[in-house]
Length: 94
Image (cartoon, rainbow, N blue to C red; front, side, top):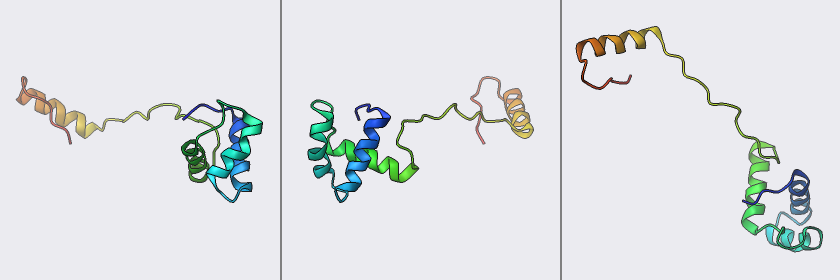
């Protein structure tokens, strides 16, 4: 999907809803305001609208960070025991 500014995405969403939720009609209506090559494809309009309906957001927001897994005391104990018993083997996962 091309990267559109937030204002352009809002314009796409408004046009989509004003044109009976038709991505093809939306593209035709956006030609005068966005100009080529900035007019989105039908699949781009569809993805923007699916994202809006699914998340309620029109912008690209990425998750801040990956959630770190905390190791339990029991898991650490089991891994130490396994390494002591099998020093050259792989560690099992629970």
